[in-house]
Amino acid sequence: MMELYCAGCGVAIQTEDKTSVGYAPPQSLEKETVICQRCYRIRHYNEASTVTLGDDDFVRILNGIGDTKALVVQVVDIFDFNGSWLRGLPRFVGGNPILLVGNKVDLLPKNVNRNRLINWIRKSAADLGLKPLDVVLVSARKGEGVERLVQAMNEYRKGRNIYVVGVTNVGKSSLINRLLKQFGESEMDITTSQFPGTTLDVIEIPLDDKSSLYDTPGIVNRDQLVHKVAPQELKIIMPDKPIKPKVYQLNAEQTMFIGGLARIDFVKGERQPFVFYLSNHLNIHRTKLANADELYAKHKGEMLAPPGPDAAEAIVWEKFTFKVPSGKYDIVISGLGWIAMHGKGANVEVHVPKGVAVGLRPSLI
Image (tube, rainbow, N blue to C red):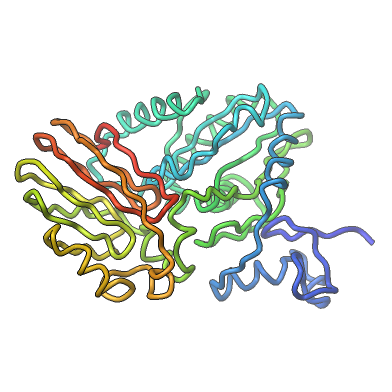
């Protein structure tokens, strides 16, 4: 019997074990397009699944790309650039050229200068050890920039296969679905969801007689904040509409809580604006620095949420200290957003769950 693969996540279909990866009810095999039960539940009920590939499987897939001649398309989340970065990618994919795609451009405020953003992405990539062939900005959700991406892929692939890679949650499968809808007749609809790790194996999509586009599984980056919260809380943290910046005029010795996920202490400096670029669903609370510990102890998991009470109890905090120079800078919290500071300099302490990356960069906006 010919082996069947799930059109949604790429995993081999089996009908024996309901608890194992790739299970599909026997009657579903008669359909033209077969998807596994896990993909069915994600699509129709938006239910999370805890099945993910191990790191060894990811390395095996990436090393496999290194053994071929191909164009590699790395997708990053503009809203979480560092958190969505694939570390060491050039090493894994050999000498294959890499096209860098910044997704979720629709979430940025309208006043972001696109050319400046592309230059910023190039510089950030170079700092992380990658010189991409080109940088393309897209919105997989809205279809913006997709034609430009197709042009770039056709120009750079030179008849070779294309591999699309990225960490979980960058919108890789949504982007491929958009490519399929816009530029090819296909009944394949790759499963997309807000839950990390939706694609489970390599999915092949023929481009012509000799070459194909391959969607690879999202690689789990443990630094991402999405791994610190319950699946139902992801929709609060992850923006789904353009961000509306929130401006607060702060005095020294004031503290801002972003739900129960981050705490920003303005330790020293002149009164100045702190501009928060975050999901519009997140609550921000202001208090005096002297009262911050007590407020958190009393209200974590409730007023200061997400995360909920159980996850809040389990958080181990890590502190980052910044001497922000005068000028225009952003404090970036991986997976959450950033705080723009355009004042005369400040001493700031940022508390986040251990493992979440925090950094300082020249302002994006």
